[in-house]
Length: 158
Image (cartoon, rainbow, N blue to C red; front, top):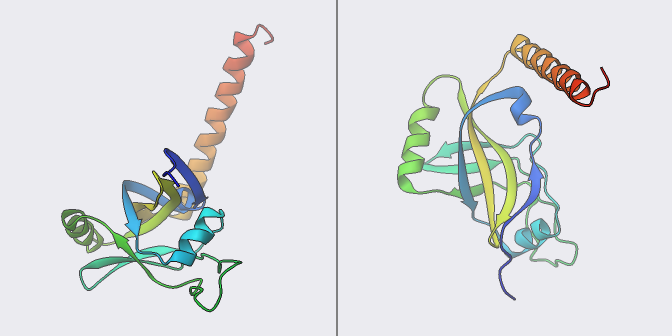
């Protein structure tokens, strides 16, 4: 079977951009088992409460839920197991250096297939305070209202 081209998103972490200020993003492969890949191809995954962490000079993804494959047998995987992220050595070293700075963390933003390979987009992030979240919501609402107003004026209604 030929590999499918393009990018097919399986799951996205919608809360991440609300709870964190994303400073930089990276694309990483994941070390997965066969039943995990089949479950992802079926579109089943959740990034709620997932995060990435450095251990022994490598980056690992914790808390990502990939449900057991429905047609799997005793070879099925553990749904919330820790998964190793596959990055280039210089990227790992750069991330580890930045993670040692205070207040920075790695948050998965989305899981997708790129040319048939399972990938995760991780963001180097800094946690937002409550007032930052409120300011972002107010700014987004103001932008939306501005777009509505200019859209109406352009159509000759307002």
